[in-house]
Every structure is written in structure tokens, then in C-alpha cells.
Length: 69
Image 1 (tube, rainbow, N blue to C red):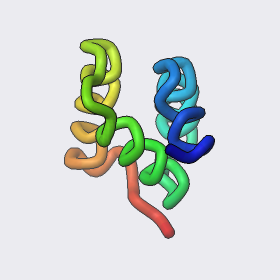
Image 2 (image 1 turned 30 degrees about the horizontal axis):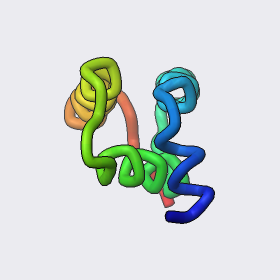
Image 3 (image 1 turned 180 degrees about the vertical axis):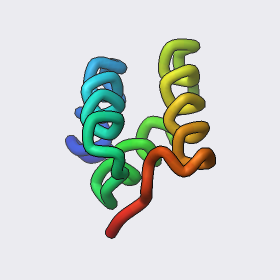
């Protein structure tokens, strides 16, 4: 496994920070999507991680957050 993958999946602290940054800026960058992908590729994710990801996706579907390259 790469160190990038490990750093993104060790705790949901970085996920919480990313969520805060995304909600503040109203955009999801390519890097943010890569972080989400790494978290989702873990064998298991916590309920907290799942709730954060669900909330983020909900905000994207509602148009409150935009995906950018």
C-alpha cells in the first residue's frame, strides 16, 4: 500500500477536515475526490466516515457543492 493511501485511511480526522474545507469553499477538487476514493476502498469504514461521505454526496446532489478539476 502507498503512504498516500495510508495517510488518507488512518483516521477520519482528515476526512472531517476535508469536509469542513469543502463546505466552506463549496467545491470538491480532484484531490478531494482521490481522498474519498482511498477511504471508500478500505475494507471497512466507520459509521462516522460513512455519515460524512453521505452528507458530502447529499450536498453535491443538491447543487450546494460543485465538482471541479
